[in-house]
Length: 387
Image (cartoon, rainbow, N blue to C red; front, side):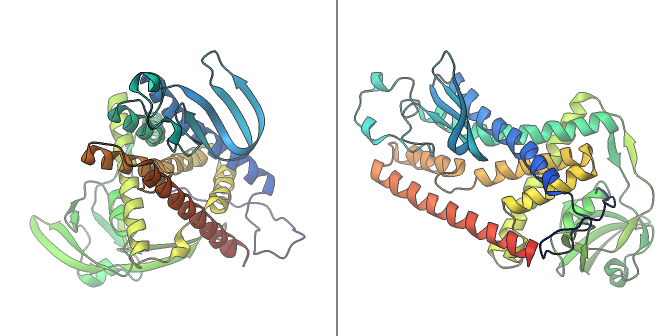
């Protein structure tokens, strides 16, 4: 957890919320572009390199949407372009009708030899691999960032032993004592004190079962987690569940070799994916407010704040957003990578592709959903930031 530093006072000519500790608008824009630009390129490079390995021609590699600002055509005929709105990107392969990778209906009845080198002409497993390669590239980026932190600073380790209590501690009220070693929370193994927060932060107000070792005795204690609501120096509200305990010792950072650092990166990334999945499920079933969802305005705001704290914090935030991009793209919504994979799964079960009209309908509905969702989260962000 990074501790924010105090910023400088700024005077604005608008009637806005208290932004005394917020970075300047220019720093926010620069940070947003530095964050999103490379992550988009990495995602699309995953698709492009997988397609090239599978022998599928890429017609266009675009960073951004809208009016073209710059382009270059390489010797393979791929048009590399930068567009005016750098809020996404795409790779359009031969045989795609448009940037959403919807198959070209005019190729439906072509013989196999004419489809060679196109996306529809590739075997099913290759098409699935090309689609999956984008999210995998983002996940790999996060793994390498976490592994780099482990190589540079070592892997933190704190024994999961209760060393102190908060003033109003849910754990103390439930009967947990100083010196108790927490072994499991709701059946999930706890090997390090940092894992405790990961297992309780998403469940404020809910009851969890804490399994612990007390001087050799195995004990299970149900604890109703406290709800902790606070704001950081940038005014961002943080809501989390707390046991109300502190560690009994300071963290020790153990130097690791590259292989162990890579393992640490994988575990850290998997933990983040798990927490994102739990958070999304809680929003869907109504356990969390949709106000906790964020879109591009909130990502821009946070990126400026993290860059104002330093490159270390900004790089760690980039790893989280990279995982977020992979997670969102794997949702089974047509036009997203997960939607393509769902269509390929249906093709594998049916042993033949879905009809062109069925795919077009799915992509139109998916596009409508994605646009409606983007508008919703953007308005949600702006309402929270300015109202």
